[in-house]
Length: 378
Image 1 (cartoon, helix red, strand yellow):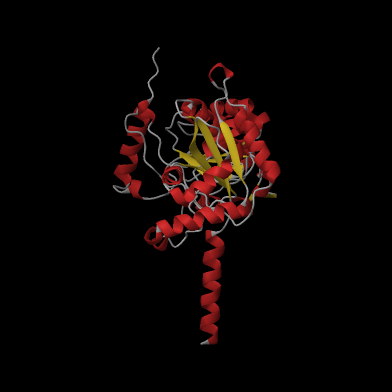
Image 2 (cartoon, rainbow, N blue to C red):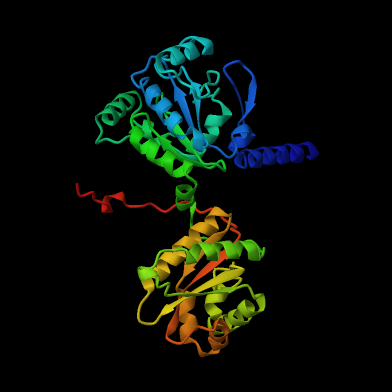
């Protein structure tokens, strides 16, 4: 029995360590056969590619090198892993492959030893990549995507139900902090890949793409100095005629937040009871940024102010959530008047919205965005 318990504990430990594994825990072999830790690339934007030298997609090496040269200075790296599993189109040694790639495409990005990306001998790197970003299908409106789908479906009618790498030049985009952001099939347009690389490599665009609405926060106060930075970014937002029609109140007073929260809990007892994670009415955030604007306008300017603050918060490791519900409750509940009084809102102004702000205790995925709503009039 003791031996059985020990084996069970070992199995559980193995599962937990696998599920918690980071890309930076993985080691690979370079083109000289030496071990390289991917932790060496922490802080870099990565595009990880399985390649082949005798494939119809091999000319993508030229596009990849152009991408590398364009964004390398911004902390972008391409990690090339030749693989011979698809049509045996990567024959020869890694030395021969590297000589071919440098002679024909003058590649400068690092090439690693040949690996397998599917099956019993697949490299742990690809086990992780596929687990985080499964196959999402080929674009059947694209001729090459339609061709690949037809070829693979003839071999396996349900090929698209599996996470396996489907062919050479599948790509994975990895953020500076090791998150696997996107998977690209070999038929995907390199212009789409470049747009995403640009968004990640540029720190401003990266902050825009990484920001999420956070609804779970650590029990950790936000340093006053960081709040100063966030607010400074906010008041440097554009406004019509530079009118700056806003006032900002940063609530760091924990007692004030707790006192108004008690009023809220009494008024909404059933709702609070149903929420097992409830700490306070402000999405459990430890700090609030209250934005007020004139009662007769200023909403656009106030919105620009808020967006600047949310992006600044993201850039320095904080999370935010823009709240409207608590504002409506505060403005309509007589018992909460003491909270509004403490804000010292000028006459003629109203509380417009509140930004919950704190250290995130979650990493929610991005919600889908509908690109079809954008039309270019040329």
